[in-house]
Structures are given as structure tokens and as C-alpha cells.
Length: 101
Image 1 (tube, one colour):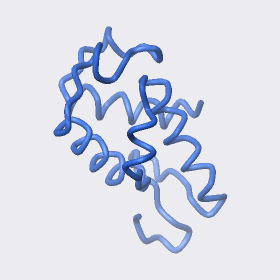
Image 2 (cartoon, one colour):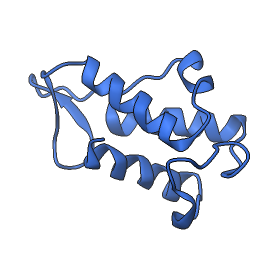
Image 3 (spheres, rainbow, N blue to C red):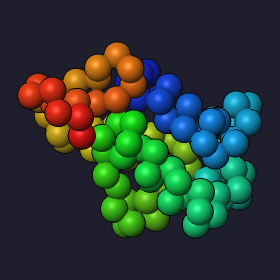
């Protein structure tokens, strides 16, 4: 897993969703262990799109039972976007043309 992507996802969970850092294990169940509800999922999806340029579908989100599942889906979506994407060092993804996604 890309450590930069993992770090950004952890920031979203800690800063925006108030998940304690000691609960961020990859096997943590998003609902049972982390207490996610519909608002948590909506906030998470919005922040992932904003910070990483990744848009998750409802189906992709509903398939994520654990935090590890979420990491894998987001990393896979970034990989699918190909080499035109890069991290700009501020934690967001931008295109070669300089337009932020």
C-alpha cells in the first residue's frame, strides 16, 4: 500500500471523523469497531474525493467492511487512474496539466 495514501486516509479518519489513532488497524470494522454511520461514510467519501481525487461509488463503499478494505479500494482507484496522476506533496492528487481533481 502506498504510505502517502494511507497517511492521508488516516488523517481523514482522525481529523474529520474523530477516530482514535489506536483504532486504525487494517482489520478494524468500519461499523462495529469505528462506529461509522451514514454521515461518517458521506463525510469520508467527500474528503477522499477532495484530498485524493478519488470518487467512490456507493457499491464500492458498501463493499468495504474493514479499514483495510477501504485502503485497498482507494489505492486500486488511484492505480486505475494511471501515471498521469501524481501527488503534489500537499496530500492531494493533480493531473499533469496542473488542474486539481
